[in-house]
Image (cartoon, rainbow, N blue to C red):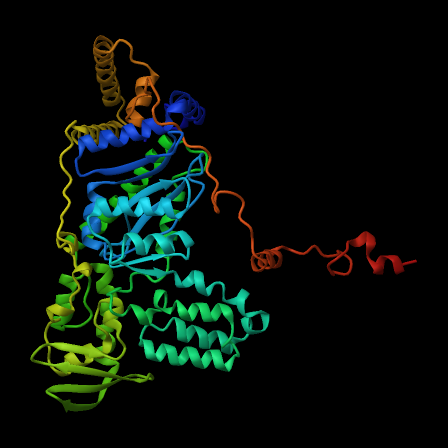
Length: 559
């Protein structure tokens, strides 16, 4: 845009020097400046919420914050949530804990974030209380890992929320617990996976399958498996069928993906001021992508494959991502599923539907109440109708999806239909920050437009340069008249949105020590995997490992 590398106004050295000046300006006021920035955000927007806590030495040890957009997103999509701690995001090794949900495009969104010095019951209790106060509601289901502190804090603070443990974290330990023989037994792995991960079965069926696996492989008295069975209601899908999960979460993979996303913006040597700046950049990008998806839904409709009215309705109602999940179900239900039997039972019609090459499914259809149930249980798991029900709809000449089977959170206007009775609205910025950003964006846009139009025309470029130089001289004169003491310090203050306090009341935190802040201890399994990945050096003479050509037996045998 500017012509070449030589025409760029700043170099890498300039950026390094600016960061040096920034850190020198912050000095010991790091935590104080972050809290002052929070107060300014609260003053500018009353819907911004934050809370913090200090230890006995008046050091910042806990911080939670969320803004109006995040609170509105929670009101619309906060039925299921997960959160997982991540480390190495700041120089004080404070643990970063973002609260993650899923929007109507099945993309991750952030409901709020926090920094805590310790991962203990007291810290998580404080954190969940702050979250509950900010949102005024709690999610129906919350997914975390098996952290001992969370096992205590979540039920105590959010008793109405069903606490679910991450299935992946549990099953990843399977190989270490059962021993090498069973870990390499494909029949055992298939049996245990079919028992644990199957979302279509009910609790009695799970218990029957579990008992069979334990008996067949002599694991009835295994302590670890006994503990898992006792805690089955906290992680097995069969015990969460009373809560609509919509295929959203059953592991903390969403939170881990969110942590990885924020990790691209933050570094382990960041100060708190830098961390907050980078966090805001990450949130801006996340919301920009969400707005792009919303605009895509508003401005276009996906291509349909059939002339069926039910598909056209789905294309209008669902977001594009959800429609492309629904479309294959409709296609399969219309062309690859056949009804093998139909009976009447207490005013309801029972269908036996068979998908090509697969087992039979039973579908119950009641025309008067439009209640349809399928033994595959896909609607309860995912939130869209399955191919077997759609095959019955085709047979019954149903022209549109009944309203009870359109889940609001998967619709295009989901953000206008909050599931909770509070709608958060961002108030206008009392200091005109939004207006200034809008004018600045327009100004940059006009500058690059003029540069593009004038490029290649020397006379036009010369006129543009003269105009800008005159404007620059005018602005410099006005700036010096209004603020004679304008220095790089004022630039730093405008970027961090805070000034260095004359008196520090909130001290910077001490470097925290948590389970993930230092060097992680690796399991024997991880060590073995890493060892297998390493290239083994081989002898150039005999092509065998363990020695080189100088010590090769074949060379020694030569005369």
